[in-house]
Length: 75
Image 1 (cartoon, rainbow, N blue to C red):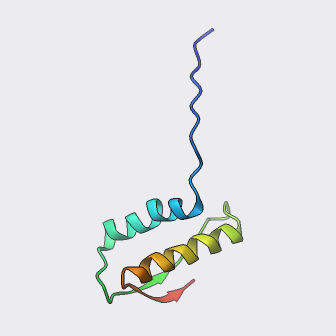
Image 2 (cartoon, rainbow, N blue to C red):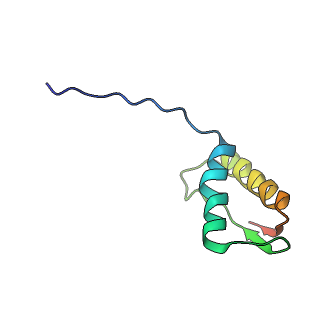
């Protein structure tokens, strides 16, 4: 029998997930500047519950607003 290795990782909070997976990608792809306007669309492709999508959406809007980015439309 092979030696199996068990890897245990702490699950990220919704806020940590949002900062790592959404905010970082927005800045990597768009490099928004203070005063820019964005439409925010968070889609779980059927795999994420609505409450989780609302939490992610709200936190992403808060992060963008804190950086001076206007959320023109949220979908």
